[in-house]
Length: 371
Image 1 (cartoon, rainbow, N blue to C red):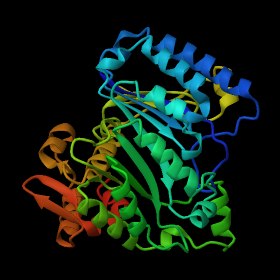
Image 2 (image 1 turned 135 degrees about the vertical axis):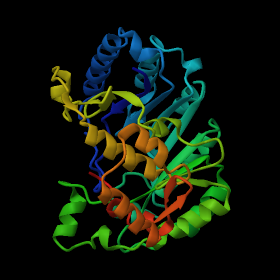
Image 3 (image 1 turned 180 degrees about the horizontal axis):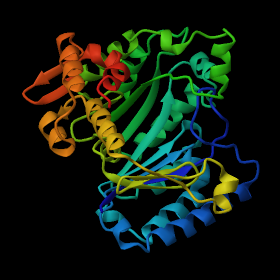
Image 4 (image 1 turned 90 degrees about the vertical axis):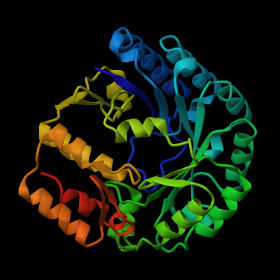
């Protein structure tokens, strides 16, 4: 048993973005955050009594929500709680997410003192009307202020962007200027998806907004061209990094390493058993046990295939895949060869990778190879 990643979910935001399907709430009183932190400490203290949890952890990811909504005092409490159990000097990467409007100079100064710190900023779009369309709280002036604050303190900074926003031009030219002005080490660029029970879904269902699923891949290719021209490697479908700056924590997920998650809606996977914390702060505070799901061999096989095909450079090693899961059914090889012949997959020796065409229809290509 080797748990290599620790994820902590901070479920607080100033407001809920129209597209967001992650569990988050807007805290009405400050004591709500204090209750969360107190319970989180008890939870972490309990779990780290198990020796196997702590000894192999290589990466920590504090996500949300918006973790910097905890404020300096809350962030310090959280980091010190983790440091009670882990030697932070030995952790290979510690990521904390932030939205621009809550990254203050004092928070940045404190975080910058943490070894191997990596800041991930949710920017999403670079025009105010597009941020408003997505229901974002930040505006471009606060984005620029936060970037100036961040780059005065941190070396390793990542930014998230959303592609395929209806009625919006490509972000590619604005992104090019941004990465020329600021030395980002990592960029994530995700297509907008319609999550259930969100304002975005209601707008699409009511015909007030075009379905993002009907928007073509042109913006993705334009963004990829800009980033690759500026020295970023396109190493995962939605992720680009300067050499040596891939997200180590997410690589753990994509390589099927075991991980543990704390906080409401957090997920752990240990020895092919997935534990899902309840996506409700009150229930989590009251001690509701996580749901437990034992992954079948077919589940494990399908997840392994899907995650490795998302890695555009390493891809899926057929030799390793067959050693782990045996020779596959005839339909697998038939579908595999069909996608290779149609140019959606590329085969080099025994390595299978998605092509540019395959990335556009990755879900369909990958699901064709499932059992």
